[in-house]
Length: 388
Ligand code: APR
Ligand code: PHB
Image (cartoon, rainbow, N blue to C red; front, side, top):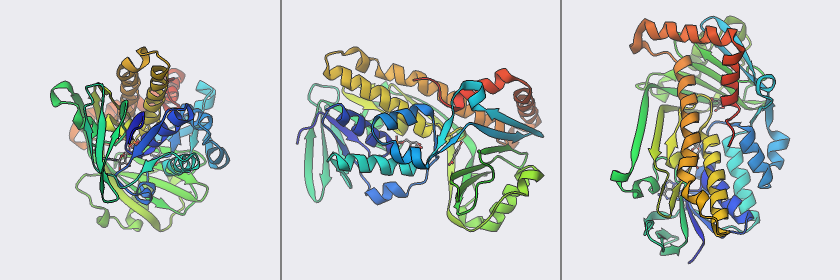
């Protein structure tokens, strides 16, 4: 088999890249190791920057998003006795859209299917060959047969645990990692969202977040020690703890009910440089991970994919500069968004091991935020997304 671009990984990065390339007439194929149902069962954040919304619309997958997504013009931060409303719209002229990543993925699958794009699920043992030369190819096993795809370029969109990043020789990779000493316990429930906007709560007992998927589906999180296990958290214990971390007037309004999903995720910041090697280009979680505070994971994947799609399109038109500059261009935005995710995490979580000094610094930071339009603008412009 021969295709122009072989995309490894059928998460949001790989699917969006495939769609953008095929819309531009480039023959791309996606190899995904899991089944479609497995990919669609993963629950991830659901805050889309304007930039991503614009890309999805331009790629022809904006209809359901426009009909079902919620536009949020701000968010509420409650911490250290302060209640700070960040008015994105007034401060930056922009908003974010609440629409689950799972729904984005579903829309991408549907669009690819409608155009007959090849998305091969349950591709096993995907291996990259010759990425440094002129004739790269990918081998794998699919439906009981050994297969090979020859291509011009390979896009590594296979997430943090994928094979693509590891194909780049270790001596050429620089990896930067920061592991946070806690995780997020998340539950999904058929309950009304706490407020019409997201509520980020910093509390001495730990961080909490009240988010949503739609008018009848809420997503809530609690900061928990990494030693906690999901089985140890009954729904009742979760709601009780969440109430304790909210100011009384919000705790009173919290609608509770049985969870339909419950999981614990560790928090990490991770960046691997460079994001390209020969004819292999990394995008999304394959190259970087952010902690969920600020919901940048999917949005960063989208900016990578946007840069990469434009660079590949230019390459096929004879302009080689954008592809040569892809890694540096993507990393510049990755570092800024990682800084924002790290600083939001740092401001709102409790770090008991770091003592009273940090807690006071966090208090001072929130107080500064409450009283400074400049500080609120800085938070807002990062939250709605830095320009591409
Ligand atoms: N071969 C083929 N596919 C693979 C392989 C492999 N060896 N390894 C992993 N994959 C697939 C995974 O099964 C997954 O479907 O690659 C996909 C990667 O998807 P994500 O992990 O969702 O990463 P990405 O598409 O970059 O999306 C980034 O989604 O994962 C969230 O937090 C992340 O919000 C961020 C965004
Ligand atoms: C979510 O809805 O899952 C979510 C929202 C905002 C975040 C993180 C997660 O910062």
